[in-house]
Length: 480
Image 1 (cartoon, rainbow, N blue to C red):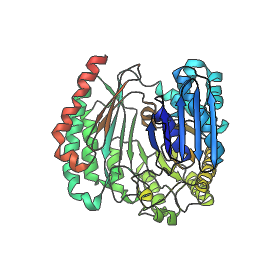
Image 2: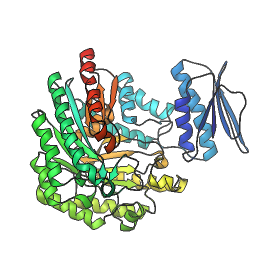
Image 3: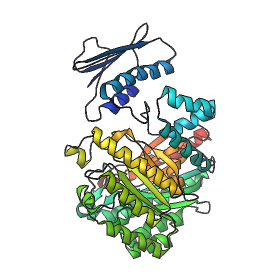
Image 4: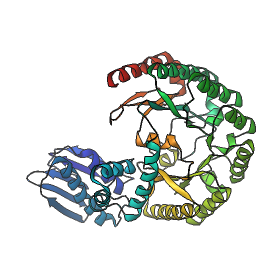
């Protein structure tokens, strides 16, 4: 699809909006051209706002009066949105919203304009469905309570373990299979512990207070019990954990969970873990490259309960290849019988670097319709089981333009998930692929410091990485 941007600078939102309706196509953005190549979308500002669309035999034009820049951008998007809804016969449930954080947007409107005006803007200006508005509102109430716990000197710590037993076919994260990268794990753990110590000294020097810790990946439980103990004890011995509210480790793959690893987590003050089946349908697990069974998930869950974990999250994905609405319902019902404290419902996102996408998978209307039914059932089922939506985010190339939602029993919300999605406070990142996000107190400004992505880069250029971390001192000196 060719998208022409003439005499304005609103290409980012218009490109993302176009992608909502053409998720499997390359969007070619051409600026300030009067020669149009079919099929095309032309957006233009002259003495008015203009949108022209020609796709095969479908030809439509629309226009509107000029206003200020913010409204001009929104109105150009509205003109295009209505034409593409007509062309495709699809009305996206989140309307024109293309961003990752719709709840954050709603909160800003709520605080600025009040509830009624915020609601009207979502439904009348952004064309969000009543159902998704209601979900955003419920989520915002819970998020706000958690956000208010953060103070100007609060921060969270993210620790990256970029290793997995194998790569799931839908995954696009930078990670290394243990079969290929086993020789890197010991040196990686050595340097990670040193980076944690270095980061702790910076936090101490600046008087920052650690609020939450999240160890993700990859799959942290690909490490041995001894390696886990080294990393986690380094955190506890290096940071002041007296104000720590939450310590989470993703034990995501059931085939990596053993009793000695769980005991190591427990002994190191980890209070919350994730055990992620994605589905309890063995044939679907095979289709997505998950080398474990549904029974292994249940066994791992029961083992975690035996060891003493009383805050467990379980992830499911709606829209997986070959999964059906009936199979998804069966999975969720079985998960609810286990009664974990949190259930996170993801919608499949076909990332460009994932195996599914590389092998030719694409998003179609049938997939979108099935995923929507799965999410509808999940919402009603989880509410009936006394779960509440506590955080929500969206991704690009997501089936049906839907969302990922974290549901929890009251009092078991993941603080870290809310803080990272709201960009509430500073997050210090350690490990390959981790990103340090420095947040200016009472401001929206963020500065990012990137660690090297791959384990071999992280190891080979380690000293250069530590030098980057010293930018944290400069940031806080300038903003405090």
